[in-house]
Length: 123
Image 1 (cartoon, one colour):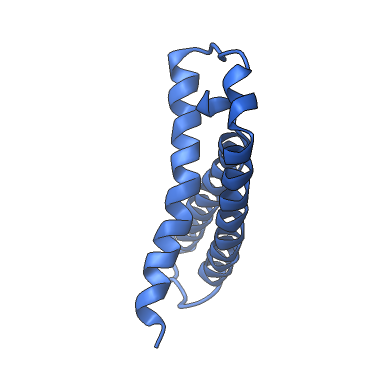
Image 2 (spheres, one colour):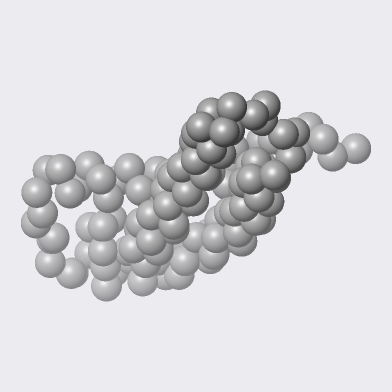
């Protein structure tokens, strides 16, 4: 039943987006390290790393917006719970189910971690 909700479907998409951002950031950092290793130069204190920081800042801003959207979709799902219960159960493989729930969990954890990091700094 839960997998038929708008919240879950949107959360999977958002989780996949966050997963791509995390992978892109990690690959970019590794590429910068390999570049400096090949040229035998010390890593600069700015450069590609600065771009990764900007990418991560943009992603956490999007995280807050997507989290608000998920809350709105959850409220909509609560209003249409009767319709959701009548929809047929979705049968998928165990691996796909685990991956879908992982993406949904990621879509909740990223904004929550962002909020936990920001709240102590608000004075």
